[in-house]
Image 1: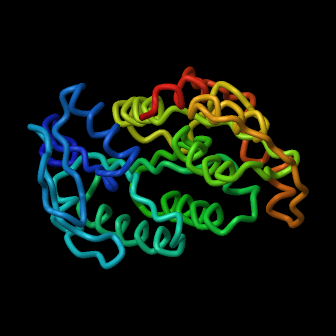
Image 2: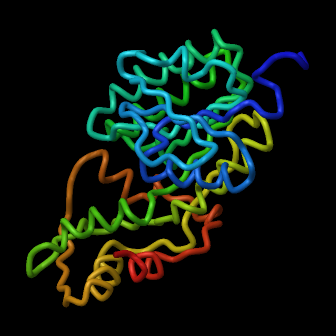
Length: 263
């Protein structure tokens, strides 16, 4: 319907997790392209840019969701709590119920390559979220990506904190630039509901030991690595590359470039 605010040209795009690593970049790209943006956050605004509206709410309790989705045409769901994966599933259910009730035209979910193939708790929760989105009664798009450069660097910094970095034997990573993912998400806002779109992976697949050496060089330190076997179903899936997408290595910025530019 032309009069439906969810379809009007000036209706805002809601970004959940809009103050997080990815969400901030999505908000900035939406504003660059001229969209009105609404951010759902647990905290009041302090420094939002012009054209960005803040709604205080909480996906884990449902507080503020009715106001957050009121009149929006598209929701970009970036909010996630890796340390509490069950919360992600509950939050997605509440968000979908609110969006469905408001007649939201499109919900975009950001997910992870391998969530249906790696038996890791957080990945299982992300797959549960995908299933909710697919059956939630709101037109949808799901994009899976590999891990962001920053996340990989944080993990490797912990591994390389001592004189010798103990790294999982046979494990590779395919980190991707968060800004490139944000750009793709805004492209999907403009494309409209597209279902499960092609995965998005970083430009390189690196052995973890090589990634540790790249990071150490960027930090100005030496690095010795020792590969150790880690048993279990989850690590077998990671060693098999279930979290990689070699056929969709569409990212451009390399891990070395990303960590060299990082503060």
